[in-house]
Image (cartoon, rainbow, N blue to C red; front, side, top):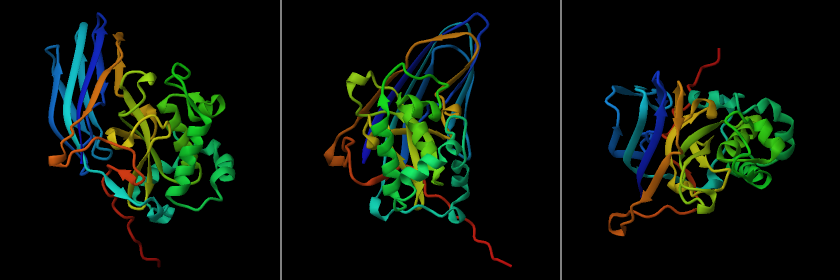
Length: 298
């Protein structure tokens, strides 16, 4: 089992009129990602609320901050009990048999314009055997053709622009892979989490964007940026793309500092706790999907 002690610190300077915040940085709760010892500290004496989306499981923190400095500190212990599967046994699910939760991730979205990639994706991947291998081929194609480079994209950069420019950060890699998967009718969704195992030359630990693709009976992890160790990713939010998965949405005049994130593995062989590592198995921390409803033909 993988146990991660996660610490997140966010610092802001709120303008004179105050500001509303909508945060999404709490670790998600699934049967494979067990959350314990959560603690949230806010240094202003203000009320707040935390709501969980019943469909996605995303956990939203809402507050109205007073003018002046604002610091949030979040600490949590996360146990990752990955479902592991043989990639050779994972098949794509016919659209007719997809669970309802997966259907929505077949369509184009704001930053993943899959309808613009149909011809390209068909030429590149349409002839490959369907299953985990085809998804891996899409992931590897993105890794080979896009260069990880800071300050080359913005929050408005879409898959189309990343394909044209061939540079970006983790968010851009994820958008392009998702668009290519959806273009060949494979459900794919955007996931935010915290990175683990990235080269320190890429900068300090940060929030991370990766991809989940629906195969078999659940969502499996893919990291098209190739910068981290997926076994150590802590899931935060799932969404169509980055438009609805930001760790902070701010409504008002606010200055901010880069987030401070520390994800530390707890290693203790006597308790079956090990550091995350690369592996050849397909990994998932999502719950098993409900099968598609059957309907009698008339």
